[in-house]
Image (cartoon, rainbow, N blue to C red):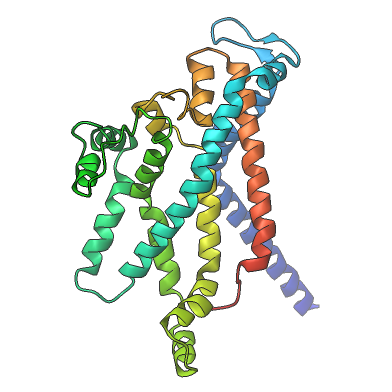
Length: 306
């Protein structure tokens, strides 16, 4: 009888502790929870309301039914913006991953001044986006830009990077390689987590450097590659600052990324309902790409224990 009473008291005591832990957890996490509800879920739900409305930020929203959808299918700039964004995504993101992975491999070697080199390669990532865009405008200047001066050493004629519709997206992709610092750091962390025992075992079995890299290192860091790929594709659909500061969508709409076009519809053309619809189009596209990547990841991402 006494044992039963003690057990009940202990269970009641644990229950009180759990309630206290729950209360404290909710209290300390309440700023984040409120931020998500007010600044994220709330605007998303309101944007669902706006896609059926005509609202110019001045008068009250007016219901127009499927009017914004009709505009979407008749708007040639939507397909243009999607093609520009797709071009940047499918060419730029793989190059960013290769560059970041290559830098991580080099900076993972035991070299003198390793910490300094890591800092130097990461610094551009923390530079304000507007400041970086202004600097790159000067670098890509067709008359006195540094890039054309370097190409001129090899006999390459000056290129009008920001004024030629065929050259401007390659220029933006080149500029994006300047900001691979975060991806590089993530790759570097993954490389440092590869067990040395596996590398040594492969070396004992007679594997050369390339075989050790391709058969051991790459499979072990494949979850990191997958993570950077997903984040990179999501980020490529959010390119805004560089095109807004440097080209304003030109020349000939060749840098009118979807994020910039959404901004222009919302705050320049004052078509908030249409901008909300375009935002949901981008959301659906990104979700589709993310689901496809997670499905394909089962065929190549290695999740073995380390």
